[in-house]
Image (cartoon, helix red, strand yellow):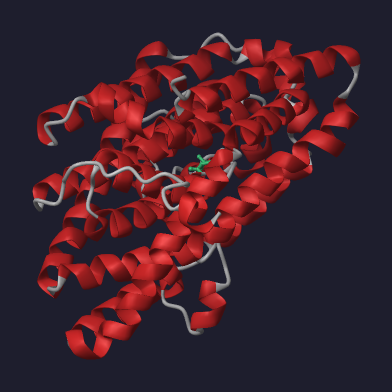
Length: 441
Ligand code: ASP
């Protein structure tokens, strides 16, 4: 019998998880889900995070040392940063155009605003987001560069949130390995090559449990989601974000087809397990190991490119989130502060959303923190921040799930484009978890 493809298994797990979540709501099994189902999803996300740092280090070292030439690396680096900025600006522009044309803020009644404010404005999740944003905002403009440089390699490698520090240290080490010459760097290179193979195998093994994990993750999302009536009141706003995200998919497909000369449907199919995980976990950082595995083995991007482009992208390139920023910022202005809707403010949104997406973490809900930074840049009245966040909080989780899919798809697309531009887009070479199982069982 033909084996069911991974993406189908994951999709079935997701659908069953959603159905089970609704059943649980119906029969009051929320506590059962929290106690017995949610931990399965949490363990899965922890496993993915567990292998993120070793995978980035091993594959980036392998990538750089396989290049054998520092100037090639510089070439890839510069292109990557520029293309990432380009796709982010496209995303923000699409968001701004849609929100100005569709005007989702127009129909929102004062009652809805009051209800949302009463429900969420003083909740700890909102106040903590505002505090976090203020902390980031009080830093100088070069702070993120300063933060990128670790002062302790072991601490950096031990901190999943310090992804850029890990990347910095690894590139530094990789380039130094090139400079000491092939003979002297050989033991290190062999070590990291072998580590890389083993960690990629860990990804395959973890993915065997993905269908069960997404079941658990989604059942939990359903039982913890907000009041459906409030969700309906914000439907127009949510739809604008969703339409924008769909346009981004079309944009990526065009890039893949015209620039990388590959069939976009094939591309989406190969990437789909990573996209489904992005949706289920709302975290592009947690999805990163799977994105790397899919892009390298199933799409054929050489490790020299993917090992740099994808980890960097997970941290600095968030097209879905940036598009969402633009829509959310203008939406709250339409509802709460229409006098602020000047063209100059919208231009500031483009710039700040771009910078904020570079500086923010790839974790669930990071987009809300960025939104405060964006609002601050246009002098949105401070006393209205909690109300502004309350306004969009109810639909944040589903939109977060969707924008994370776009964040991951954007990274994968750019890795293909960069790979094509430097002649490093090859053929897929799929490895399965049990390729060598017969030898050891
Ligand atoms: N959850 C998103 C990510 O990890 C970030 C955000 O939009 O909140 O990519």
